Image (cartoon, rainbow, N blue to C red):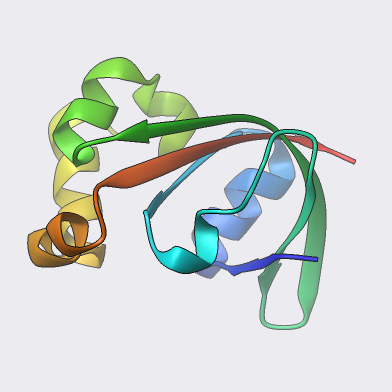
Length: 109
């Protein structure tokens, strides 16, 4: 089972149902995640299994945020705040090197 590590605040948003969308750089380790697959999200020793119901790729965070519902990605943030948050976590060179970003839409299992 594929696993994804989260910071506490994002893990809690996912588990509460407020954050059904997760965006990552399109690293080789995430390229094989498919619709219908069950993946495990975790923070420290807490786990939360979800089913992937959507996978969408984008060139960069700006394009992704223009197309997706920002509040479902980072609840409580507006477009600019979300863009700054993603760019703080993932440098632009990583996005370019690995071919963009991917959004996983999930539901609880």
